Image (cartoon, rainbow, N blue to C red; front, side):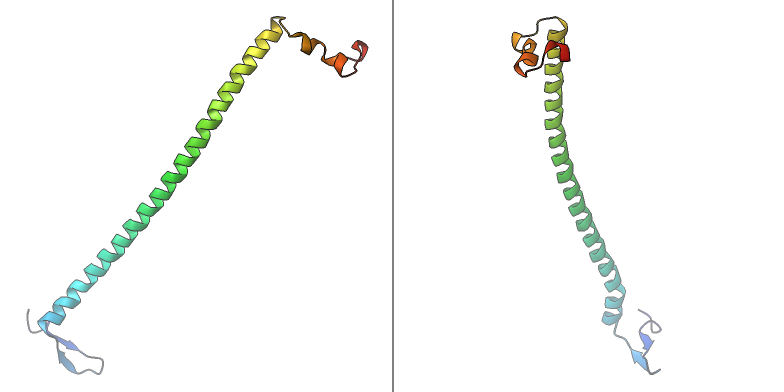
Length: 107
């Protein structure tokens, strides 16, 4: 360490001799502060990613359940339509208007 870097001006304009150890601490303290800030940012990012992943998994599970229900309902509806179109309607469905008190002329 040279003489110029080991001398600094204090607030009152007086020359103050700075020890080499103090000068080294001053030079290395900022990188450590930067490193701590970076590490905190990394931890925050990892936390955000974990929350987003959990939310995505929850949404994916809900979608899978809804998809299965929709496919099941679509298949059942397709079978029902084919049965109706084929003329194999159960007798109960043929009698629904009569059971409800509707006459064949009101249909």
